[in-house]
Image 1 (cartoon, one colour):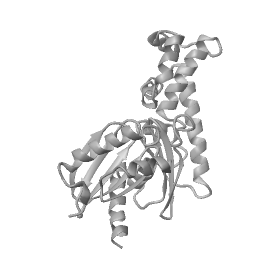
Image 2 (image 1 turned 30 degrees about the vertical axis):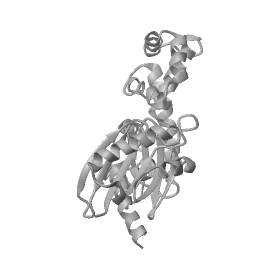
Image 3 (image 1 turned 180 degrees about the vertical axis):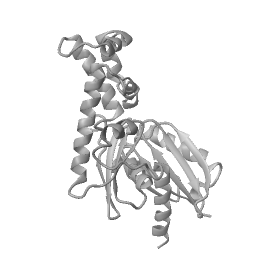
Image 4 (image 1 turned 90 degrees about the vertical axis):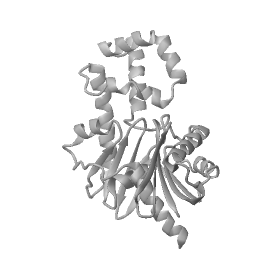
Length: 279
């Protein structure tokens, strides 16, 4: 019996589900982060752990799998991972693709996935394109990791007198043990660790928090305006920061809730992959 595996993996965790040919869910699994470009071996371990939990002893050789993973837009990394997986058939795509498929179903729309990282996708007339999602160093606009990094940077600038010192920034410097402590943290911190600072910005009336998040909202607004093109589309916000951006941008476009999750999208794509492999 053929079974289907869908995996949604990002900077904070990996989620898996298994279904049969009728679409009945047979099991779920979770594991740690899954960014195939920044941590190939860690992603492999977490994908296998989540899959093993979801499969619950079933033969992986009977599995048709679609994995939506952070960093999978780097094809060489995705191919290296695929070669190490035990499934009968495997397709690896960006987590933006599976998230957008789950969120939109067959409908046209824009997805803004705002979590530890960020990525955008547009679906028009059944054709989907991904935008952004190029990682913490080169992109991830408006993401939790970038917001956390910006908060630390602003605290250092305030200490040097280049920005206004506020209670939030003063508290950050105290917490980390001053400038040197901030630098030590930032030297080795991964994106998810920067992202843990983001809740201090959302809903805060501290001037620094308002300035940092306001700038991020403006940047995301600019991205979505460009993606709208000449025929406006509804926008679906995903991820832990999605509601915060949706609240600030709801007057500009129709905001629609997601129809399903990234795992749902991966499972739907796995069933489509089965049709292709049988043809």
